[in-house]
Image 1: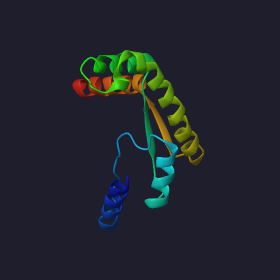
Image 2: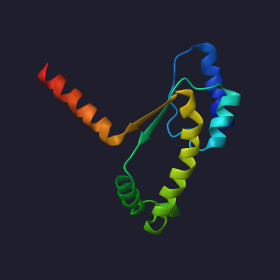
Image 3: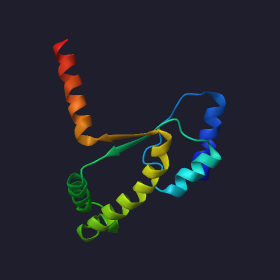
Image 4: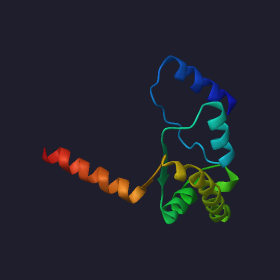
Length: 121
């Protein structure tokens, strides 16, 4: 995490363009460390996926993955753990009006509509 923060600080010193850090913060300690090292983020986006779809994808990945937690017997536990840890992050950012939650269903509808508009125009 230190290398990531150092690199972000280098980039911020040169230019003020925003950047996206995929899958981060996943835990509250990461959010707090980011705030101490880099500053409070302007925006936090949570891409929310339906639990059934998540389970299906993890189980499919488990067929080729060597990760033990991708195996079917661990998938439910993994999803529960994620839900608990990400809720702490949500609770941290939500009061600051910095958190935007995007549902995979809503995103798909918006992308489909945009695609239809671009085809029509």
